[in-house]
Image 1: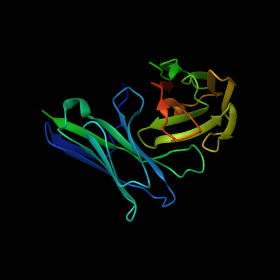
Image 2: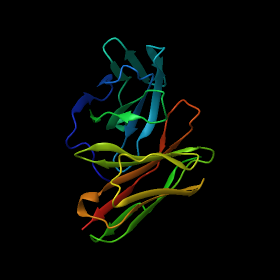
Image 3: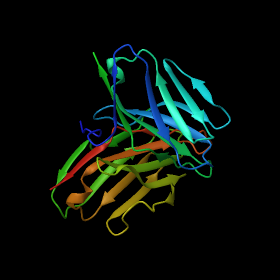
Length: 112
Length: 114
């Protein structure tokens, strides 16, 4: 499949460690945020979302944190596994329509 | 297992040829998006539809690209004539306008124009 990570920032973590992927968003009016995971040769896959009236949301092994004061979003992955290796995108929505604005993406590389 | 499907998965064509990419959104979703992904530009929104009506195609080169939804189960993206700079992966995504606004992506069409 096509590699989309050659020019993206890379985060390298040891298998079993926790990963933290950060994203800065630009629009203070955004009220809905999503993290997507994209594996090589596949389309982006929904991981977790959060509304602006929350500052934390947990899923299975993943947690999203939202800091509206500094317009910062983070994705925490607990006990990172080789299958977590992918490009991760944050996306925001202003609520005015259905459009999402995507960040550039960060490559997560898991070392065995 | 509802998912977005796209055809073809891979397309190699010569410059100047017409290219048509097809997408079947998830049944019941009323919003369809077309994206282009390249290493240099990342994920770019080309156009999107709600209830089959085009809402925004400002990201699409108007002179050569066109997007349509002939019916609720089919969205098409055409490039005529194609150029080497159109080489990219084209994704279709669908969602519901009722919110929340998560979008579900298809596997993509990898287009190579020589």
